[in-house]
Length: 100
Image (cartoon, rainbow, N blue to C red; front, side, top):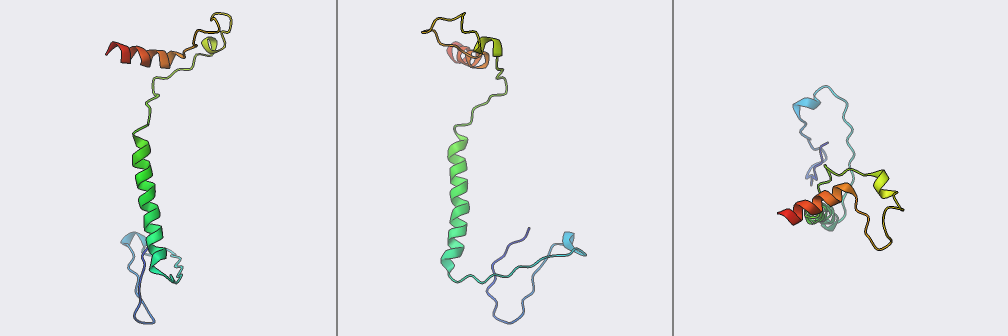
C-alpha cells in the first residue's frame, strides 16, 4: 500500500510506483483534503495508537507455561470455603516469585 499527500501546482501529477508493481493494475483514489487539520488528526491518531501500545506493553503477562487444571478448578469438596483455589500455573508463578 502506498499513501502520499500531494499539493499539485499543475493539472497533472506523476505518482512514483515501486518496481514490484510494474505490470499490475493499480487503483488510484484522489480525495481533496480541505484543511491541514485533517492531515494532523490522522497523524496524531497513529501517534496515539503507538503511545497506547507502549503503555499497555508494560502489562503483558507471559502465560506460556500456564496450564488450566479442570479437576482442581471443579474440586468443590476438597477445599473449605475460605481457602483460595489456585490454578497450577498461577501457583508455580507464585512459588518462583517467593523463591527468588
